[in-house]
Length: 321
Image 1 (cartoon, rainbow, N blue to C red):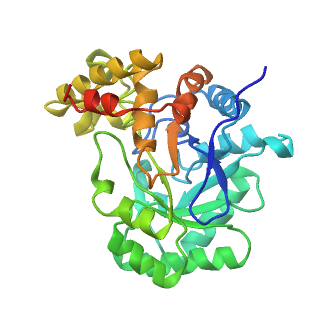
Image 2: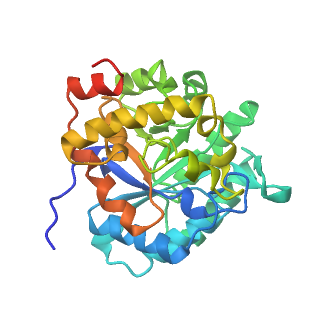
């Protein structure tokens, strides 16, 4: 079946030419850990990855922490045996370790990061990580240690490019003293706009690559999330207890979804695709990480990269029309 090629863009100065939508692999880490998403079928995950690749998506973003290795193992299984021209870029992250009771423990110590990288490469079944990112700048005092370890991995050829996630501009500046930070990964959506204040303008000015996560606010803006569905989320789905998914914020967010639905109807698409297209409108943003758990979720959202929103659409989303 012929597919129109997906639009691509340069990721900062990395030289990587990425599709504007990437496959986000947080949710396929499943449940049973601090930031889990409830039960997940690995075969569904693999089919979703293959569907995204079939449609032309050319990068996957995962992390060692997602299911404490489960997401990376699943990605590795999905990529195993694929022809060279179908192999996507693989982005992953380090610094979150499994603590007692499967809660997250932070470490930016050199030896911990070197072990993390080795374990990630093994689970993913690859020789080098295309983009390796510090997952969180915690502990803050150890940022320089972590960056030095990342630079060491790049020197060894185990990592091709270095990025950071969830950093402030001040933390970015410190990291840049130690190693060239080529990309940023902030949270960015219609309901999480902090990155607009300082981080995205700096990235645009300095041509630092940006891939944003949770452009649909972890499913809240998909159009499929209702009060009833939230009430029925498994107890090991972190969203069930997140303030954005509970009152008083929930009513505001569901009202926003209805405005997204109005725009989606104009374009013959879904509220989720509109939310992703909105994030991609920011000139600093190169790509959006979109989470998929089943193959059926992929098609309606991959097209968000080609969705052009006009001033009237943006006014509708802001409730100004």
